[in-house]
Image 1: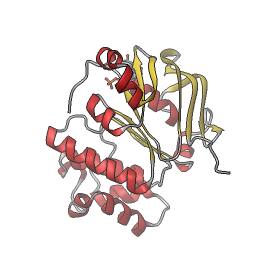
Image 2: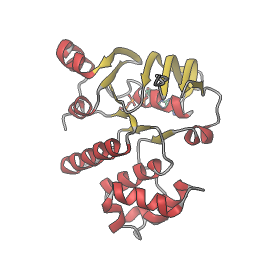
Image 3: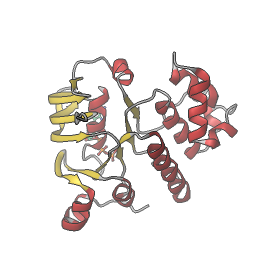
Image 4: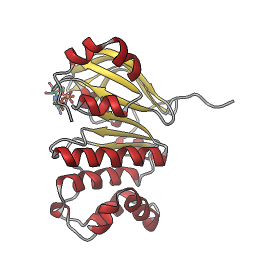
Length: 241
Ligand SMILES: Nc1ncnc2c1ncn2[C@@H]1O[C@H](COP(=O)(O)OP(=O)(O)OP(=O)(O)O)[C@@H](O)[C@H]1O
């Protein structure tokens, strides 16, 4: 029988910073190949929710499981080794290193040529810019590099925190198309945080909607669209792509 253990599971978690609660009652499970989206206004707790899985916000109650194993007390560096890829808000690259060096640093002890191959296949633009320094890249290219750095660790689940932030509309569309192709091709499970409601509704099969740190919807995108336009409009004074 096929295993149904989710890759990543949040069980009624509370998370925040320095003992202060930011989000609570969050439960959802990301299974193989599933695409989840997280929606909510500024400050609703989207990033805090994502960060709890990688240990960058404080998990104050509940459990987070990776492949069925509680990772609450697993050190941050080991979480990426256990299949969790994280692309934080802002661009997680070394500006003084070239594109190629940035990828190789992320791949660490992995096979260097395989890592470069993988990154350049997913984002051919990075190959053209491989000798450029991080600061010589456009915003979209920096975001591609940041995602490539997560991908070469070969995650099962990729967590993306507002990858479209600060990009021009055309670049947002191109990057979103590249991300979607990449996820399909690699068969990744994914959790995407974005402020653009249309992006989340198009991309995700399942959605978590947060309002002031509490979930107001957790379930299939189709049902949200069909039965809960009020939630979409209310929770989301959000931008269109
Ligand atoms: N490192 C931190 N230390 C303390 N408080 C924080 C920290 N990061 C975020 N917060 C607080 O947690 C709350 C939720 O922030 P969070 O970034 O999770 O929201 P968000 O929904 O991702 O918002 P945005 O769309 O603006 O990124 C905010 O009130 C914020 O000030």
